[in-house]
Length: 113
Ligand code: FES
Image 1 (cartoon, rainbow, N blue to C red):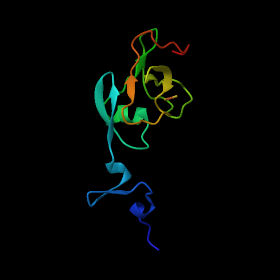
Image 2: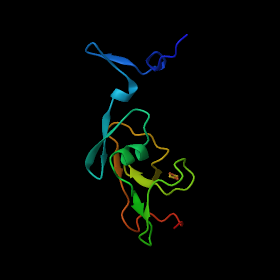
Image 3: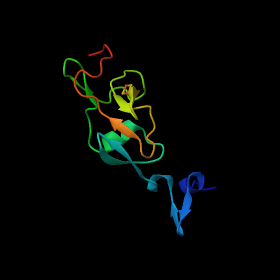
Image 4: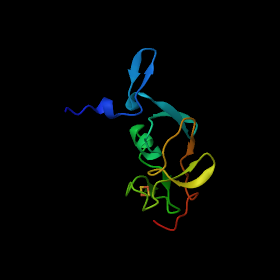
């Protein structure tokens, strides 16, 4: 038996006769008021990195922070999501229409520098 990624992709759907795989189904999220593309199953951090953003916030000492551990441990990737501050971008899935704010200087104080 041959492996077929499309056969195993449960999110495959039809759109006007064209088969869409999960990777084809993009949507947008708003980042500081700017739309950026995201895909189902992609974290906010992955969408930010794919859009060229590396710095998500600054510490009170103005040190830039972005992805460090990438697995929800270090809290370096904190952003505000739909008005809720302190969300870890690396473990929060992007959703259509989501509003993300990157934190300006001194807004995020997690006690780590
Ligand atoms: S990068 Fe470490 S918690 Fe997100």
